[in-house]
Length: 401
Ligand code: SF4
Image (cartoon, rainbow, N blue to C red; front, side, top):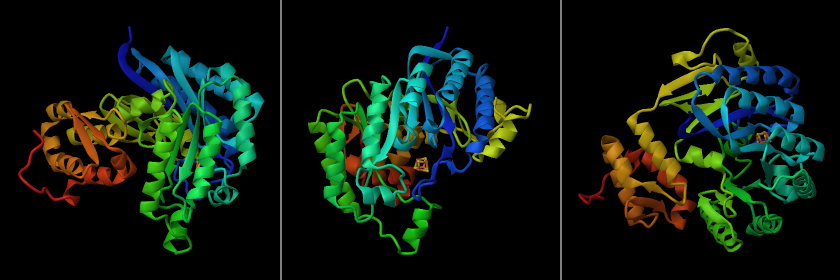
């Protein structure tokens, strides 16, 4: 017997060929010599979770990074065999692997397909040579297109492409050209993210030094609005702030995450959310490998000795997660349900919701609260106020009731 509540599994591959200046993911260049030890550690970590996850059905697996497509097909096969051995994996599970164009080859893709991967998510980012150089990406537009052909030739019928807009001094025309070319390739799914300058990255240092000027937020919002209209016209459903899918091709793994379902993360720097606990795994690959070689258990009864930060999810955390993740989705959130489940925490943010409704950033249909297209374009502005309601003083005696 298995619990019907969806469970997802995330496996983090920390290796990259170069470290891109804007990237704050837990990824490292020139550490490939650790890949054998990393794989042994990840196999052990999967095994350690087996007992704790018993009775739960894994409906999605996501092998992310980093650059998982640096691994060979037999390494991915060992990971997925271990996942199937130690977890109940649904026969129709969505199994995604992240790839970068320069490390894609038809042989590797065939190996991944044979191992059970059924969805590929490739980081294209841009097709403009200057933008690719600015982003430190190693591929060209031609390589990205060839990689997609190789992915298709290996039998993948479910492909996501990642794109980034809102680069400093980006011209609308270069973004439009990238998007038009990519739409013509007809991927089943597109993720279009605005570039964010993350703390402690080389890009943040360049911005602080005045060498790079961040994009104008109004221009970024304009691009986001145009993108949503263009992709909708092309037949893609805008089902999440940054994500678009052809019918039935939404990313099930991320949907579970946005709907606050449980997920187990393994691998250095992975995060997990399981049975009311949130945790993260130690970030440094060498420390991860060392800890998995020990016989110790993990903290708070969790099974992995590589887990280091762990916290119980409070009522307030649960509400903020449900709002900030759920409002990214076109389906929105069940406001009355949230109010019933978390009444005290709800009272704290009620005036922020009311402000979003009053300013046409959100709309309410019966109990369902959704962001408007304008709200999606400035979603982060809304979310920072939900996280810190004092940024928006309670205005009136109006109520949402
Ligand atoms: S390839 Fe991706 S994960 Fe690796 S450094 Fe660049 S942005 Fe980060």
